[in-house]
Length: 374
Image (cartoon, rainbow, N blue to C red):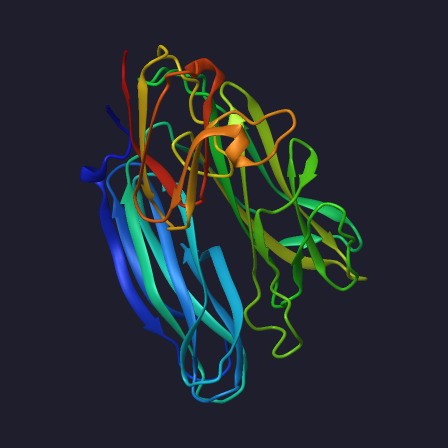
C-alpha cells in the first residue's frame, strides 16, 4: 500500500460561524482570522451561506466571500424564497490554495443585495479552514489588481503558465495525468455586472463578459455564477465566480488566461484573481492519475475521501470505447458515493495496461492506493 494523504500532518486552522447585521448591506467583514504557517502548506477553505428569512414568501438575495490579505479569493451568491421562516442555504463553496511560510489574514464577508424584510440577514455556517499534506502538488496564483479595461475591448487580466512535472513511478505504475482545478474571482469595480461566458455565448453591452482560455482556446466553465441578478442596490456585493477542471499529461506545458470583454461605452475598472492547483491525486472530471504497471491477475485498491468538498464521487476502471453505450459497457467496475469510498478490482481476464482509472468529484482526493501482485 502507498499512503497518499498524510492525515497525521493535517490540522483545522479555523472553524466558526457568522451572522451579519439585518437588512441590505454591501460587503461587510464578519470574521477575521490570522494564520501563521511554518512551511509551504496546502490550504482548503469551505463555507456555506444561508439567508435568514423572517416570514413566508419573502425573497432574499445575497452571498458571502473570502478574502486573503484583503484580496478576494472566492465568492458565493444566491436567492432564497421559502414558505416558512428560517435559515435557508444559498449554497456551499470550497477552494484550494498553496501558501508559502508566513503570516496571512483571511476575512469572511457577507452582502445582502435584496431583502423582502429589514430583518433578513446572511448566516455563514460553517466556515472551515484546514491544512493538508498531499504529494506532487503545485499551485499557481495571480491577482490582476484594479485594472483599467478599454471600452468594447477584450483584455487579458490574468495569465498562468503551467509547467507539468515529469512522471514519477508509484506502486501502481507511472503517473499519467495531473488534475488541474482553476478557481476564478472576477469583478467590475462597485458594479454587480459581471457575466461568466461559455464558448459560443455573445458579449453583452453594459456588462463585463468574463472568459476562460486554455492554450489559446476558449473553454466552458465547469461551474460558474455571474453576479448580476437584478438592479436592486447594484453597487452592493459585486464579484462573480468560475471553476474549471482539466487533466494535463505529465511533462507538458500549458497556458491559462482569463479575459474580460468590456461591453461599456467607456473604459471601466475591473479585477480578476485566478488560483490553479495541479495534483494527480485530486479528483476532477474523469481524472486519470496513473498508467498501470503491474501484471495480470493482480488486485488494485484505491481509497478516496472528501478533501475540501464532499460531493458524490465516481470511480471507474476500464477504458472509454470508440462507440460508447454508457458506463456499463465501457467500464469493468464502477463505484459511486459521498464520504469515504473504497474500491478494488482483480484483473483476471483484463490486462492492466488496457485499463485506467477515471475519477470524478471536485473536492475529493485519493487517500491511499495499493496492489496485490500475482
